[in-house]
Length: 117
Image (cartoon, rainbow, N blue to C red; front, top):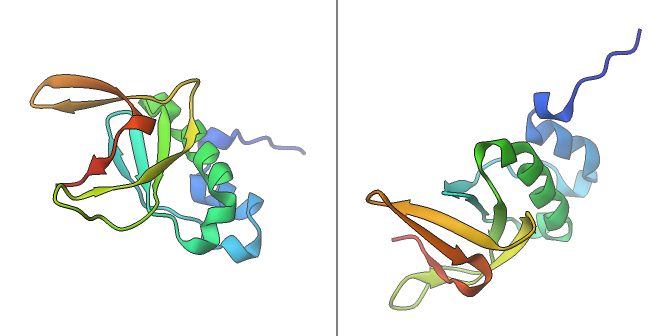
């Protein structure tokens, strides 16, 4: 008896545990979502596999409107509390969107420094 389970039925952490080497375990499970973006603070042992991690989350969450996965590169700093980021997975473009007080904003993720406060 063969049973096929679609990857969309499994938690992303289960998929990543199966595909990542033991050095990258446990896989990241926490992220922040703003509009179509999800944002990770990947640890150093995850960095060599960042594109695999990004692709897995993008595939799993794209039905919920996620189009871009980013990773924070260093600490928040400066007068506007910004941080450098990198796109680790995205659908065909790096367009993003966000909503604030019922106003929709569209932007190019690669051109934006993000501030959390």
